[in-house]
Length: 221
Image 1 (cartoon, rainbow, N blue to C red):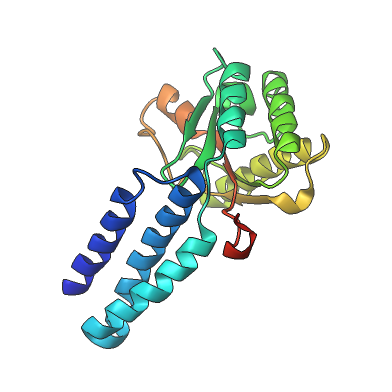
Image 2: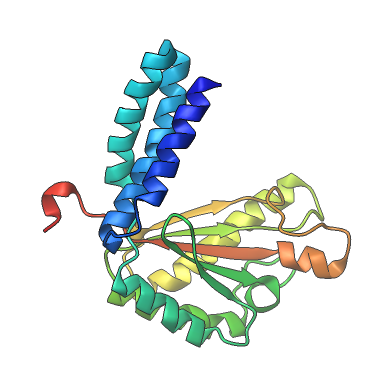
């Protein structure tokens, strides 16, 4: 229990310390806080209270290196995607860990049981590809989801295929393939119950995350 209190305190300190920081420093601090929390718990399991403190220090260092920043480029990319997706049902947001998130519903992305990009989805991806080309330091993760209809044997590969289709479409418009990671969650992460056709449609979706990693300390000015 004490180890969890230590971890929570470290994360809280990292969050409250962001008030007067630059965007780069905020991203680094958040990453440090999360890393410290995880490190404290792992260290505590391994070595009691002293292990928790040591683990927190190691975790904080790793988190600081791995944090994301919310730069002016990211803010501009968010603004452009909000403009491009207005009225389409696509949700554009900034996540707690400074990633740009696009949540794309099934009614404009893919038909049921298919992984072919629908025409209404293409203009959004075209604009998105342009923003990626304008901010080449970012990394992109695309995650496909399905509803609970059918079995995992069908849903799991279908969700991966949908993510791969979005990735391939974007790569063909300029962004380097090395920037992309894809995943399929099948029906395991619903955002609504699967009890009605409308709710099942909400669960059939693609999520795109864009992260701008914080520069290594040696690269910061």
